[in-house]
Amino acid sequence: MTKGNSKIQSVDIDALFIEGNLIDQAINEAVKKALERHKKLSHSIVVWKDGKVVTIEPKDIDKEVA
Image (cartoon, rainbow, N blue to C red; front, side):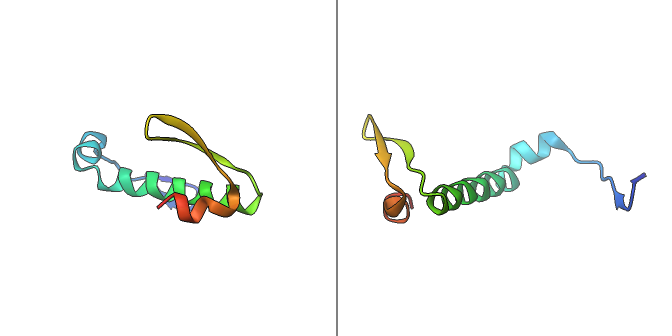
């Protein structure tokens, strides 16, 4: 089956969730891009650290989030 110029593949969603690697990779990549964007736009981020809400300034994102 094709849609436009790309082929649509059948994917076993249950197997993807059981394996988890592709989902983990996608989430990690999305977080990386979000952090890069926040830093580029000079926006702070908010994280949960040691039972508290902590604001991390853009200049400290690389140091604080590893």
